Image (cartoon, rainbow, N blue to C red; front, top):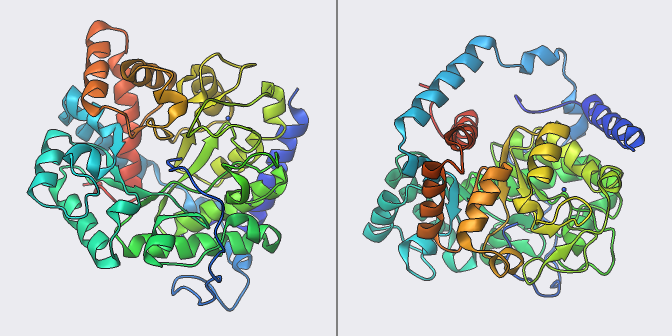
Length: 422
């Protein structure tokens, strides 16, 4: 169990978070309706889920060094990453930094079949991945076949992604009945074992349908009762409890080979506004965020989260630009202060909080300059690609900034087995 950690390691993470807090003087979603009556919780044990013993007991590690990659393995990965990055044109590199819905590049509304149109679209736009929504999901057989075929069409393996949180935001669960995991808040008092096992259930549903990437877990904390966009999607109303449960969920996803994404940095749980519709404000200082909103993100990062999704959240005390476009929050805070060196992805760029406030070219160039690696659902893919190419050619965007992001993307695809190291 390469990614699995120990119960002691969860305690260590909690201690780290506590020390961090005490010593201190940031998804792709369609608008959601009021929560429907949840389906009964799945009680069957997954084939890969421990069922007759305490999950946390299995987290004991005899020797932590057993889980460290050898220098030779690291070198092999880096050589492979460099080979692939060097083989790509600037256009291909930029396309790798984009995840879109199949509809966006095929021009077909509610794409459900991968055929000649999809193949031609992937040849024209060799994007880094696809994200699916309910109209793309007709049946288990249909989406499994679609995801298998598009991987064959793509030169580099795709991130095949979806929002599968459980509860009201569960494309496979609500559309295909692939699982019956309730909203995460309903498990708040059930501990880390439950958070882990729910991630295993979700992972198995995703893998069986050809998905490799999940825009979950939600690391936002429902600290403001007036907040409706997060609500029971959060793991807890308490920051420390959320930290424990989010880290356990990360372990569950990683143990089952699903790329996971903490969202929505720097924290969407205390906003009154919904960023799908308008600018959402986080009226806290950076120190206040360190003592609260950051805690579950710190824990999730320590657990090995692959991605962090930036929320379209305006923190006036920190930056005049939303977090998605903020170099302060992405590079200075998330990367340099919190130590996250994985893939940073935006929330959907079609959401009103950015799409109605800024031009496509400004969003593309500013977010990448700020430290974003993947643009999720840009409003106009052609304009986005052109803007980034022009910015590189004009010197506004250093070529190394593009290579840095593409290297992270390729490295993640290698580490999760999407790309062979050889």
